[in-house]
Image (cartoon, rainbow, N blue to C red; front, side, top):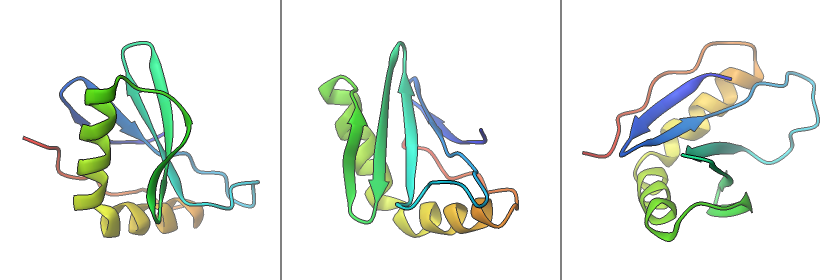
Length: 89
């Protein structure tokens, strides 16, 4: 699963399942032992959990980079490599 971004100990990844069961564009956020899945339009927690602070950071980052996330989703679904996305700083 390609890593798109890393900031404040949070890792953002996106799966590619060409022809697979994915229907809603989404990404995975990892922080220590916690994992959460966020939809991209709208930005919303779909499954899993992160500590409150990290969840808010992920949501803020995703709002800033929503267009890039959706573009990377399309690239992955067509078997292409996604672009890295700038972290929060």
